[in-house]
Image 1 (spheres, rainbow, N blue to C red):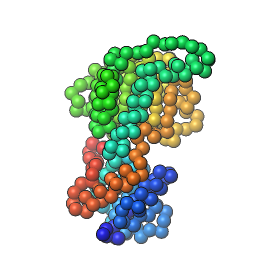
Image 2: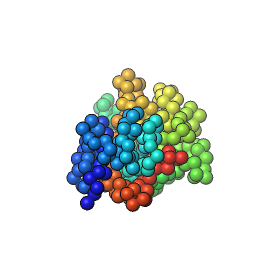
Image 3: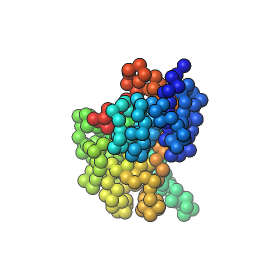
Image 4: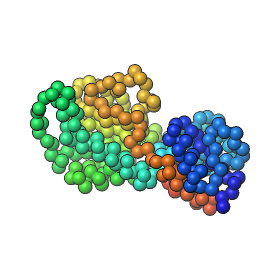
Length: 300
């Protein structure tokens, strides 16, 4: 039986994080509190959060683990009071599958000219546009970790040539982007990846290419992308943004060449997060790293 002094605090900022807390209670043997409850702070050994506010972690004197609610942990790493304890994240099949499905939907919709056919439908116009050839529709995937690797494998299985790029891939970003009909951005949020796609990089893409941004906001220079969208040269499928929630006055909301979703491409289920957290707690108690441990130096 778990030590009742080792409790879990969940920073509940949405209905989804409340479901995570409920799953932890159902699946585990630890006391679980929501931030804001009258919890005995000295009994909290694990904090589950996406972006903990300053001062929260320093109020928990016996933390032994901080765990994210998804694959990205930049919100945790930027906290000024982050203690020297292991950090865990969620990179399981429950994350890679929805991410792969989301990216495939965007790539196939663009390849098969879904937006063009939707516009024709609105005009009641019957026009059998030519179908693009899968084999000549190269896709650049930026980020070749668990998520990027799954996307590359799925695209290649469908006969769509996909090339990956990372800092250790041995290929240059220019080589991967040049002539690509779509670019999928699945990089971790680090200082090195901020603004990685700017005016110069976007210009390398083929005419009528799609920018599919599903990793972290701030990796595409938004003004540079808007310039390409306004020129009618590129389209975009955007799930993440530099500022979230996306402000109501953002031009992305109403842009005719943008399909927008509110950072949901790979949201793992509450039970999936709970499984990772509970297993990581057991591992840390044995002196082992979390299931999916974060390398602070790398930022992921």
